[in-house]
Image 1 (cartoon, one colour):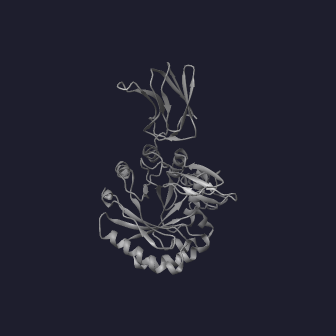
Image 2: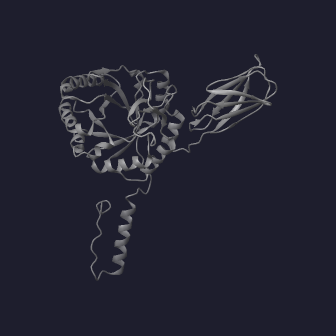
Image 3: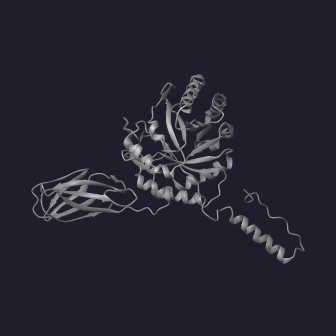
Length: 414
């Protein structure tokens, strides 16, 4: 880049006095230091509500998280396999919490020019209905993973869409890191008021869903190119991913169960500590036009692949992230049976212990639950986990029951 913040050290005349030289050197060092923020940069947080079913668990998550969130980005519609717009019916009463709303329309297939007119009409009609009702809608977001080779056509579509919409509605576009290699990126972004850079993806089973160093490079590269303010989409979720023999992704299962299997399958997830590390990196930097993160997606108690709310809130708040696992026997005096329970009282989701030992007298009746297998030994029995499973923060799980006097329980962490 050559200079920092556009500052170039002036040429020093041969007879410059010593104190002048010192002043110039100090000024240069000061400006260099300012490229890294002297105090942490505080940015606002947005979150996606991507659920098709608005459940009590979603309502609870929204209420518990509202104080941390600037705006909700609500999935309102998506295109089907032939390009028709399918509209969802979210629980609008849950959105009456004082937070602005951005409607999201997801394009699930390559956009064809023959689909432009009905899509534009459908989007304008959808936005109009939301604008005439509560809660207030401040923007429209187009979520489209356009192939890089089709960015020019996408820019033309956006140019047709924009004049049809209310001038007071801000348009946001999601953007992919792959677009950074395209000379058409600027043309696309000029059709928007804001952008969302996605830095989480499924591409290589060895790289996972999120890489902190790569994400930071993409953010800095995008900041150098974008003419509009932008947010960074960060993950709170995991996925079952399957690849075929050529390495091509054939199935990505996140929110709902999907058919299809790959030759190679893995459960991938974003490490909360790595994501928190990126936020710390960004807080130390002055990045022009960066508004802050947007989280995909709002975690709920019934979302088995998302982080727990406690973990997500800890990441946002900058709290130390730690699991705190404990195992205990809880006896029901009426039946004489005891449940063996594992609890995670920390704020970081953790893996269930691989092995739990229960010391007891002669247990005539006992059984393992929740993916554990029971093996009897002389002074009790072992509970061994058949496959790795998470235990979310602030949750507990019953992994066995016994009908005897339990003397001691303990476990070995993964």
